[in-house]
Image (cartoon, rainbow, N blue to C red; front, side, top):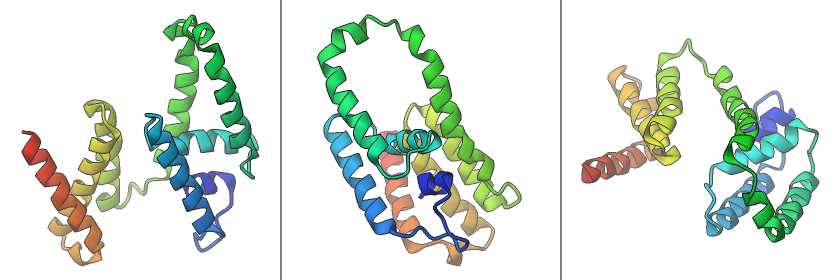
Length: 171
């Protein structure tokens, strides 16, 4: 959905046509990526990078996948490149990842605070999952405190209880 927004494929009502195909495709990419040890949340950044250079049909992703497969045969050459040489690419990826922060409704504190907690806690805890979990818990607790608890989906409560139990069991 985030990539479709960057591609201008969301209608006036905020809906994505063919969203089930897109979500299944993204899910498969996440599952296959996790089998190879990659973070499941990186599918957004790679897709957004492809969309930002004009990719819309998925052919960009297929070409990149083929090139990655071919690059595995050249891993010794790639390992010769010093880590400092990859810094500019990582900065660009960081900028791509930060752009959605501009869309946060800062006027609505019940949305702004959990979003900022999520964004800040990912690098501070060195864990995307922990940042997301803390954002979920913050959202639920904040909405309960301001009397908007009925507006929160029941699944958010369930997830928050699991996250709180997880944090408690880790301490």
